[in-house]
Each structure stands twice: as C-alpha cells, then as structure tokens.
Amino acid sequence: MSARRTLVHLAAKTGALLGAIFVVTVLLVAMPGHHAPAVQGETQQSPAAQQPSAKPVKSTSMPGMDMGDEKSSERAAVQDMTPGHTDAHSQHMFMTSMREQTPADVQRANEIVTQLRAGIEKYKDYHAALDDGFRIFLPNIPQPEYHFTSYRNGFLESLTFDPARPTSLLYKKTATGYELVGAMYTMPKRATEDQLNARVPLSVAMWHLHTNLCMPPVAQLRSADWTKFGLHGSIYTEDACSEAGGRFHPIIFGWMTHVYPYKEGLDNIYAMHHMD
Image 1 (cartoon, rainbow, N blue to C red):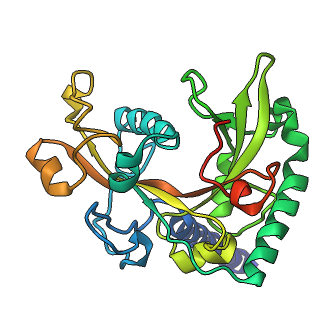
Image 2: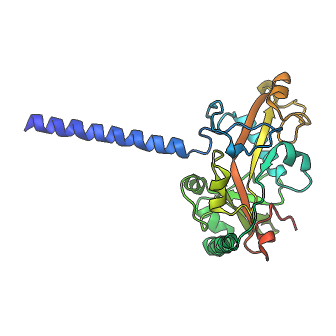
Image 3: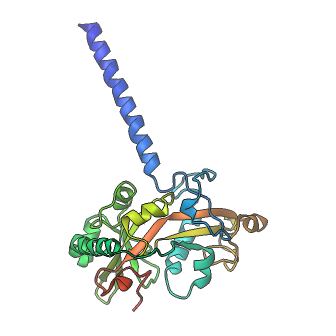
C-alpha cells in the first residue's frame, strides 16, 4: 500500500506541474506584449499584418519600459487622444483603414452598442466602477476624458470579446464627480486587422496603436528635449533614436477603440473621441 501511495502522490505532483506549465503558456500567449510586431513610422503596411518576429523586449511594469518610460508615455498617450495632434497621429499613432461598409457590419455595430449600454448602465455612478475594480488612469493629470480601467477586463479581452465588458470606461469630470460618456475596447498589439474587424467592424470603427516611441536616456529624463523625444517628439525611427542616444519602442500598449453609446448615429458613436 505504501508503494501505491507513493506512485499516486508522484502522479498527482506531475499532473499539477504539467497543469501549471499549461496555464503559464496560455497566459504568455494571451499577454498583450507577447511577440509584438515591429513598426516603423515610414511603413505603409499595417503593424498587425507584419510577421510577429520583432525582437523580444524585457518585461517590467510594461513590456520593454522602465517606470519613467511608462509614466511619460502614459501622459503622452492621453494627450495623443485629444484634438490637434495631427503630427502625432501620422508619426506616433497607427490607425486602421476604413473598410467598405456592409449591412451586416451595421447590424453588428448596433448590437455592440445595445450590449454595451446594458453592460455599463450601473457605472453611470462612477462609485460602482471603483467598487468593481476600475481604476482611474492618471487621475491627477487634467484630461478631457478620464479612463477608468479594469485590468481584469483587459486580460479577458485578450482572450475573448464581450461587448458588455469593456476594458475602460470613459468619463468627463464634473463639479460633483464624473459623468460616464463612453467605453474603450482593447486587443493585444499582435492582433491582425481581420481579428479587430471580427470584434468591431472596421467599416464603422477605427482601432489605433501608439507607435514609434523614442525615450531619452534614463539619466536625462528630467532634462530631455521633449520636442524630440516621446509620443509628440520629432524622432520616430529607430535609427534617429539611436543617433540621439535614446531607447526605441516600436509599439506601446495594445490596440484600442472608443465607443460612445449615448451619442446618436454610428459615426458619432464610434468616433475617435468627443470633446464637446
């Protein structure tokens, strides 16, 4: 009996180890930063359409970036989604091309809006969002819209799509708190445009990536010339970044698209942003 117990015990431990390896493998595949495609500002090809053979990046709080990089790029990304940044859009933001619209696309887009409205109705009280684990993105920086992000939802979005479960909620600040105006869906940066289209039709919505970030040397973060570095800087190629002594990140974050379900008309509902 003792030998039998020993065999059963070893089999159980082996099974647990194999299960753990399987779970880790699934998580690595699902992570937004895993096997990111390379992007250059001059390319005309979709980043997602390129082969996912970019050099692997070190993972810290955000893949390939230290905390100073992350905070600086987060601030720039928030500014990047406000009007008047056409240079950033052309050099530091990649946006999907609009496809020819079909009746099926329109039906699908309307279904998404209906499900989204139902799913986020309770979050009109922003306290409910905080209670459910949404966290305010850069709350101390004045923004036309504040992203309340659920990192749990973001992880689930990398695996499957539920229109009622956005990664982020979009709020405008008011005198008494926050007013819910929209939501944001995300997908891993490795996703293809066909995969994006399967979620939210590209004939209705535009997904975007923040791209070609050149960060200054760590020792120069406080004194850097931000007209050259960052998501609004003039540097947007790896060669130019290297010449300036910077650190180049082809893509940061993942794919994003905004939805404003309380607007009228699909053009307004799936607009890049609303600042009125």
